Image (cartoon, helix red, strand yellow):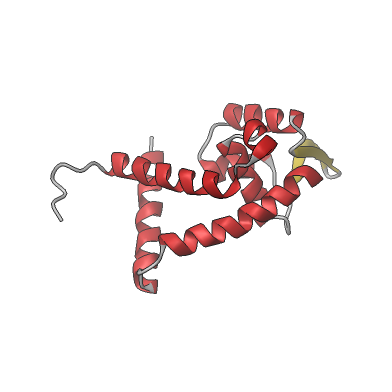
Length: 148
């Protein structure tokens, strides 16, 4: 395959668009589509996948590679929509634990199932070694772009 005229950033955006369409096709219906953004869906999926531990805003920042102000703004809007709650933690009143509301917990479960299906589809035809290699490449690209 000729990589001469290809750019990794453009290719990753193209893949991201295809994945987003897949999720929207399998998740976005009715009222939910109108009130929940793609970012909201990804955060809901993340919180659902981590229900067994306390998750804080800093965890969302790290997971999605976003700034504190962006995370704060998105989470505040999600709280206003009734998708998440921020609860004070006994040991440190400054920390706010994020939890899904009943409304978003059901959506989170659907997202978990669709996410597993999407991951399986994305990895069709890849050996375990190739999958490990791909994740290592992605981690390295994130690291490269995170350097100052």
